[in-house]
Image (cartoon, rainbow, N blue to C red; front, top):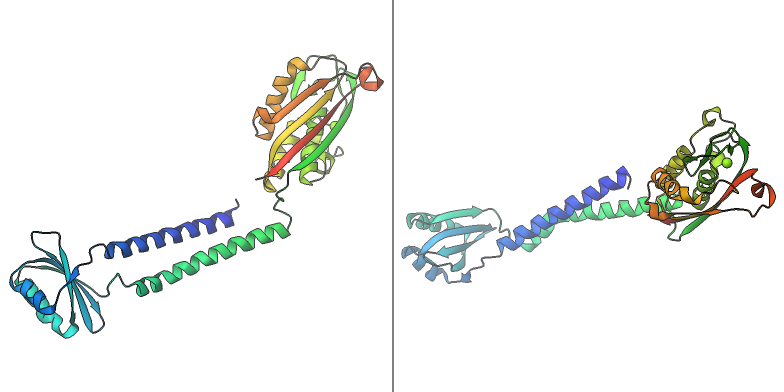
Length: 304
Ligand code: MG
């Protein structure tokens, strides 16, 4: 989630909280509705000093009085004209009643809805903006489709004596190693191509040309880390990686767990998502003669 959509989400949830508070106040205001009594009975309650507290709600030319009776939890209410209010409040005070006067009756649904209207508009505005941003991102090709994406990668390097043999991010004990501009890690290079291909982002040469001196002798894990950042920007998640590394010697199987760990670390995924296989070429062609090492990779991406 980028900062704009995060800000809109925060505004949205603030609006929801405000609406919740408003509805809570509305429910609170209605929780003690009193039984309606006549004006004469109400005056009798005042004279008998039976009223403990009184809440007065001014409503235009009239006033609603909701009272709690002494020695019970019973509420009663009556409505009087506004002109009668001074006398009534004076009599209530004389009878020792606590009085609370509100400008408007907070239980007025119409007023509540009018107050909530700006917030409802804000919520609507936030939802509209979120839809617009999603639509723009889709048009700009920044939002992946719902479909699972796959990419294929292949790489081969000649093996020469005196070069370190780096495969899958680790160095293996061997008297030969891959020729190459970088460290010549065939597995990392094929994996990088598979990831970039699945995301429609070109290939390793697009991002790390072998004519650029800054990549001479580079650790290929840097390429994978960069590819992962590009996938994050396009909101792709790495679902699975399957691969086969072909070399006649040395035997790779004992080193596969460490390779998986190194690759998983560079890509920021769990080891379970990286599957590696080691193959020989049965003595056939350059790989079979120990003159080269190669790797095939298939990567599967899913939208976040
Ligand atoms: Mg390569």
